[in-house]
Amino acid sequence: MTDAVIRVVAAGPHVSVQDGGRPGLARFGVPHSGPMDRIALAAGNTVLGNDPGQAGIEVSLGGLMLECLHGELGFAVAGGGFVIDHAGQRHHGWFGSTLRAGEKLVIRPGFWGTWACLALAGRVEADAWLGSRATHVPSGLGGGKVVAGQVLRVSDTRALPQDVAIPVPVFALPRHKLHVTLGPQDDLFPDHAMQDFLHGQFRLGSAYDRMGVRLTGPALVPESALDIASGPIARGSVQVDGQGVATVLLADHQTTGGYPRIATVLDADLDAFVQLRPGDQLRFRAVSADEATAIARTKRQTTARYLDALRRRG
Amino acid sequence: MTALHPIAEHALLVEFGRQATDQAHDQVLALDAALTGTPPVGIRQTIPAHASLMIEFDPAQTDHNRIGAAVQDLLSAPAGPRPTPAEHLIDICYDGPCAPDLDAVARASGLDREQAAACHLSGEYRVRIYGFAPGYAYLSGVPEPLRLPRKPKALRDVPAGSVLIAGGQCIISTLTMPTGWWIVGRSPARILTGDPARPFLFDIGDIIRFRRIPESALR
View 1 (cartoon, helix red, strand yellow):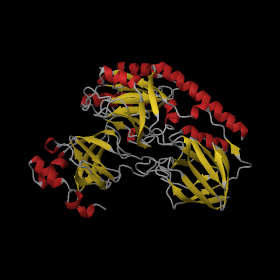
View 2 (cartoon, helix red, strand yellow):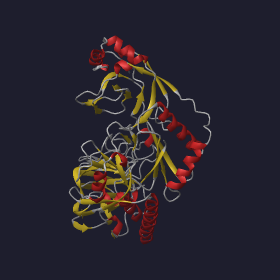
View 3 (cartoon, chains in turn cyan, orange):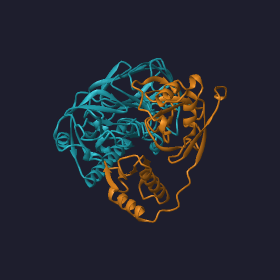
View 4 (cartoon, chains in turn cyan, blue):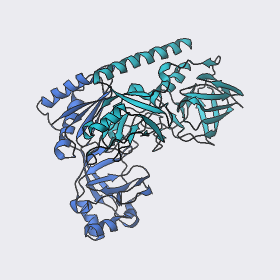
């Protein structure tokens, strides 16, 4: 048995343990959680020979600095265009190597992207809740936030035989045009608000965390909205408050809510959407249910081919 | 008027109405039970709410049309026997610091503190939806005199186990959270049970009654 001990020297806000998530419990108020960019964690894990959903650490724009106190630990960083400083060497782009006692690993934002995942060749010791180490950050349930001063233990560690440059697929780049299905409460919005939603330009606001991101852009004031009963919310729901401000709900979203939902972003677009940064532009494009299905199936195949290729390299 | 709405590539929302009525909630629960009994291929989970049910599915295995057809079949079939809702007796303390807002609620309702506690205790509550945070079960059934709008200002760091009311709804909180609801009691009940076999105390549709305990019995 080999293990490694890692000290967290510095960690930005919203840095947390994440795994493949906690499915099937939304009826009890528990969202899926898991990484904001699920491709990122799957890519890192696949390079290391792990299951795609094995627990790792999600890194926000605030960055992460680790120091290895003991042992040696294979790792892979994927998601966003982060800069990786490892043992005095700088790497741009997705990258895997081995962190050894006395070495530091720094992951900080580069030219693009908002979320990276640090996958680990070993099992990180973190609390599981309802079968998952994914952190629901608003409550702290699950593996938990990663904070400065913390010591992480990783068991059953493996070193990588050599450093790995991980190819960044085109579909992982930030996505500015989002496919949506309209509704379920689009009928509560006047025609001009629907036109603004479909043809206007929006930007990500600065209120951006794992629960969702508020948008700036045309006000989408509903005609008569605020007395509808709370209904189920999906990851990707676009809810609009009484002032007409839209919010796209993400990994740690509330499972029900009473604001009208004008549309839902396709799940297939969300991993690339979350890599936009506050201030970046976006537009919405409505698709039919059948088009949504076709887009999702193509995305699924593309992702599977990419991960297969990573697996064969490893 | 039942409406089916496609939600992205992976869900269908069945809307029985827009308002929280007993009839719509009954329809939600009936469809939820029918889907549990005869799950269509590719279904991942169902999320019941006041007047609508979201059905999440794997878009690689099925699509909105097939799930919609299954829903229509279930809705047009004669209703099966309705599952009997479970009933829970939940301890509550209305004493002193357990119920910091009970005096204000009593004043606003034209009651004294004891009457307000007795009024809350007399209600039969029903689990309508979960939301806001893990284990936050929204109960209907707050007796008419105690139905007040939320407080003008939210209070921070309200402890887990607080019994909160606003309008016709009641919550037993599961986490330390800010809230603008009225804190009328404290309960030792754990909605997040910590039991992997049954992690949540209530199912949607369950009936809740409260039983008064003194502060000394809280722990």
